[in-house]
Length: 598
Image (cartoon, rainbow, N blue to C red):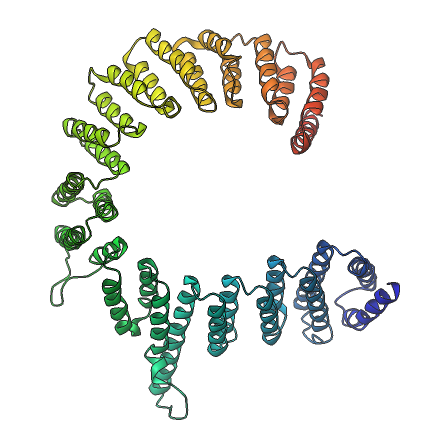
């Protein structure tokens, strides 16, 4: 091995001599480079190889290349690059070749190789790297696309890019992204050729000898790709994605029209198609010959007309395709338009009316999903239409009797309208629903009771809830109960609630942090209480939460009645209980805290 390393160091000597001779590096720096290079060479020549050693080697050489560049700029010397930089680049490529051959499955390593070649190697060399990578990673469409884009945009070789896409599609004949990017590439190529031809014609140059095939200039190759793609991938979303790409190119109007017509013909039974066609009406401008609206009122009227056209398409859609999915698209559109800000009262009222009608029609046809009943009720409540909201909530509950969301919505209507039936409905909900899904209702009941009932009533609700809700869900409930206790009865009440719950597992760290914070907000903050809370918290979370231990130590140091002599014992207890990364974090935080006090 020593002979190999010596030989490789000797191979470096010509470039190092040049670096010293032209004044880019001093003799001492050259010696340091040789020493570092020897160490790096030793590491990548060992019997047992590690990827990190190859990465470190490459990174050192890249840093050296960048340093050489900066020093060339500083002294204004730009010669001898073939003897210096080219030699280093050749060596780095050799290291990358070895690494990518040994760890051929590491895509990140290949990508690092490509990034290096893009900056330092020739285009021919990079093309070979892409070929080697794709020979191994032919199962990754994204890498084929990357290679094809580079051939098209950097090497300016549309033919190479085309061949790469064709090869990629043989491996991935049903990959939407490959078709999309291939389609885009052919349109870009056609646009580039059209611009070139126009420039030549503008300059009155003879283009007879240049090859400008009419089928490429008109986008015929892109059209063939499109036809092939939609015959294999039969999806309205995919079809629209190709149309969106085509719309980026002004010369492809005929192709855009063809794709649009095909979309309507091939995907009539897909809500996505109708949704796209309807929304397209928003983009269609005034008819030719009409003056564009100038006044705000006229602009609002124009927006109103466009929305009417959209809704006409949606109305046709829900007749042709009367499904829940189609009504969902229609209602989503109405809700989006209603949410748009406008100063026109007429337009705002029209949008509201249209939304309400759409909700009502879908409901009458029993094609309204649960979440849209929720949207409908929320919209009615925002307008203070309590009677209508209650009717909708009751209708929704009839359809989705076991849904906690629908019970919540009906209760919200009763609460917002200050109905006397609220408490009765809460009781009914808990009888009807499964206990494991009732946490949101218990929280809602307690929050409502806090504003509408006595403290005793609210506490009774919390106590019932604690008995009814078990497992992980009870953690949130305990935090809410403790918060309420502090709001309603101060620290004394919070202490009592904490004491009543202190053996009722499971807990969260926040549950303990809340009672600690409440205690610290008191004028006479009792250290004995804080110790009890920390000890109970550490009993639950002492093996995973390093911050709790640190805060306990700080409390003993900073509290007027703290005992700093306890800190050492707490530290060693922490070291016994904490595991792995938590222990390391604790040691680091403790060291920083001590340094801050020196």
